[in-house]
Image 1 (cartoon, rainbow, N blue to C red):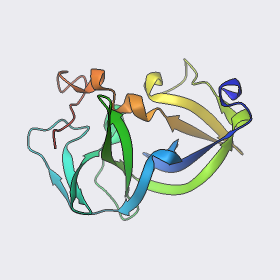
Image 2: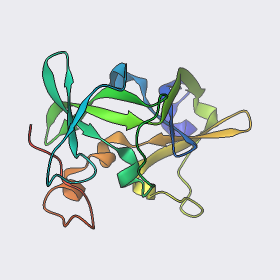
Image 3: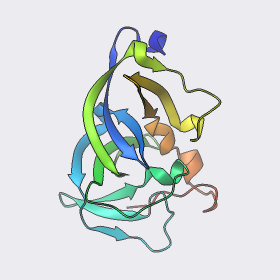
Length: 167
């Protein structure tokens, strides 16, 4: 991975999901919100099954635990929504990403980043960009583009992969 990054560091936002530490590229994050009222959409797929109002704009809310095969839980006092920008079908799209907790914005040195191991991961490896090591802890860097990959979201049955909502 350090060959891919060169000598640069990767600036990430670290977040908690189901007791694990994940990260996403900080450049994707527009803002971090405390929990706000959300509206469940009847019949919507579980990955993006709700909408929220962000400064007067309707924004779909995604729960990454669904795509990562984790148990979904109700929000707590520590839960946060990361308002991020992802590219869907070639268009920049604002989406809310639910997290159990947001820890910090930090830099991970290129030398501390490694390719995703093919064995020993409990999450789908194509959804993991790389694994960072910081002290004795691992940080799982999500591949946000693949988390929202249209091939996995549109037209698939509910049991295989959820579908994005049309706003």
